[in-house]
Length: 92
Image (cartoon, rainbow, N blue to C red; front, top):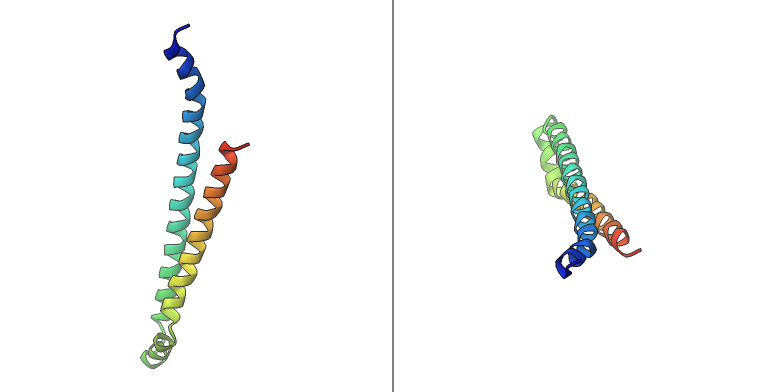
């Protein structure tokens, strides 16, 4: 058994686990991002059906910025949960 075979035997499971965790994390974050963007577009389009005066009052109140804050918070929470679960996956 050479050193290269021994090192490859040690590193290969770690690389496989890292790639699996990275793939699951990317799919989760991209899926949540897509869902949040779709929900925000539905909210924006439903507010667009209001009268111009009411929409102006909502805009002054910051409802559209609030939608963005809520969507960003959801995305950040999912990303943080994914990062902590990935850490638990490697550190047992």
